[in-house]
Every structure is written in C-alpha cells, then in structure tokens.
Image (tube, rainbow, N blue to C red; front, side, top):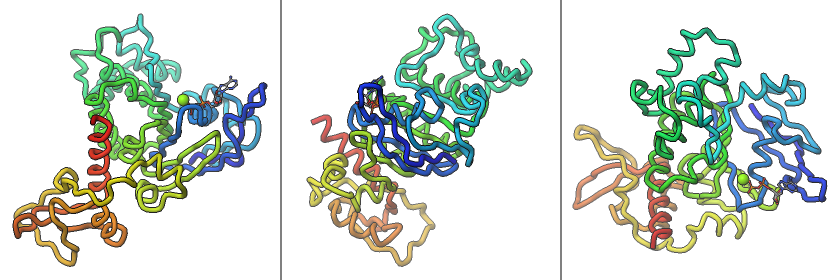
Length: 318
Ligand code: ADP
Ligand code: MG
C-alpha cells in the first residue's frame, strides 16, 4: 500500500532527519513508527502526504509515486491525526468532522448521515455532541473527534502522530482499546507514531524502530520481544530485566467457557514466569492456564503482550 524506497530527508543545514529509509506497509496494516525524540518519525510521516518534501528516493502509494498524485486528492485521501488536535475552535463538532466531505462536495444528506455514523464509531452520542464547540469537550473527547474527522471521507490511509500522548493514562488506554476494536472493523492502512513501546506493542501489527533517521528493526511485536536485533532494541523494549519474575497471567488470559475442551496445549500456572511463558509461546500459539487443578482459560501472544504492557506500566508508576 505504502512503500518507501531509499528515502532520505536532508535539511539545508545538512541534518539527515531520515536516512535511506526502506519499508513496505501493507494494506490494512497498523504500522507503528517508534523511536526516541528526534529520530525522524514525524518527518517520515509527513513525507507520506507531502507535508514535507523528500530529498532522495521514492514513496509510492498503491504503486504510484506520491509526486504523481494531485496534492489535494492525496491529502483528502489520507486522514491525519495529530497530538494537539487541530480542531477548528470556532467551528462546531459537526462542522469540524464535515471539512473533507465538504471539500469533496458530498451531498449534505450524506454528510449529515456520516457525522452520526462517525460519532457513534468513536463512542460519542451525536445528539449531545454535534452542536458543541471543541472547548466544551475533554482532551480525550477532542482526540476522538480528531479520529472521526480523519475517517470522515473514508480515506484508505490514516496517519497518526502521537495522537494519544497528551492524554492522561486512563483516557489514553481507553482510546487505544477503542482504536483496536475500530480497526478490526475499518481495516485501514494506519501509520501510527509513538515514543511509547507499551503503546507500540499493544497496537502494532508491525513496529518499525528508528534511531537517528535510520531503521534499527522492523518486525512484529513478537519479533521485538523474542528476537530483538541488538542492545538498542532490547533496551528500548525494556523487558530484558525481570524475565524470571512471576506475572499475573490472568491479566492477559481469555477465560474458558464452561463447555469448552482443550486439547494438546501446554499448561501453565496463573503465576508463571515471563521466561516460561515466552519460551512456550515461541513454539505454541496458545497455552492453557491452570489454577488449583482446573483449566481456567487460555493465553495467546496478544494476551502475553497485555501482561507485559501492564508490567511495564507498573514499572513506570513505581
Ligand atoms: P521525531 O518526530 O522522531 O521526534 P522529527 O522527524 O521531528 O523527529 O525530526 C528529526 C530530526 O530532524 C531532528 O533531529 C530534528 O531536529 C530535525 N529537523 C526537523 N525539522 C528540521 C528543520 N526544519 N531543519 C533542520 N532540521 C530539522
Ligand atoms: Mg515527532
């Protein structure tokens, strides 16, 4: 869907913000770009919709060079969500959402219908929110409108630049959870920038870790956890310490339905250690979880990532 071929961005002062960047992002994939501050994430994102011109290489969308697209069509067909949402303060929520559909000259009835649909999608009641102004909403609600607006004209691609990082931890997690559910439904190609590994592991189909404008590793969350490319990745993922620590498996477990029978799955305890779980999950898709002699649920890789995330969260809050 989006491909980068040897893309570089060199500023006049000689800084390479992005350096020989090669990546193919698949249709319907949520790709997380992560890295320390200044590593080139925002520059990479903005080159996709030509907010920043690239200096070397080629970016293609659906096999067509971005330079061959009409700039307006390109921007309208790519939703964009920022950290400090640029909602228009003097416009109501419905007017904010309608911006791109209006530009695309949709019929007003269709726009009207779409606004309701989008507000439902992002969990806000249209009756309550349509006529409000942005300042009458909480930060989390404003970010939801930002997402709704980016989705408004149903673009195939969404770019999100640290969209949740200005929110309090509880709102942030709620928006992450809701994005996962929403993405199952809409299956957009999403490029999501963050500097938070926990968020990356939770949301990404794949993660691309950048450092000083270059890619250090691209891979699935599993690959980051089980096959980190080098010490920088290991440190960035930050889970090498505490591998023998016992974790509460229940946090990531799918409870067993009464009639369900499990066959051929390795069994772990509800307080297994990270290394035991990691070892088994590198060879099996699913594990059975046993407590007091009874199988109480199953754990898969997604579940393990949830456990790791809550471990990291715990560590951050200590
Ligand atoms: P990130 O989003 O990962 O924090 P950016 O993509 O914003 O990183 O920036 C990457 C690098 O490019 C940084 O070193 C930054 O200082 C540099 N940079 C950004 N904009 C300019 C500019 N207009 N002129 C020179 N250097 C810039
Ligand atoms: Mg940035």
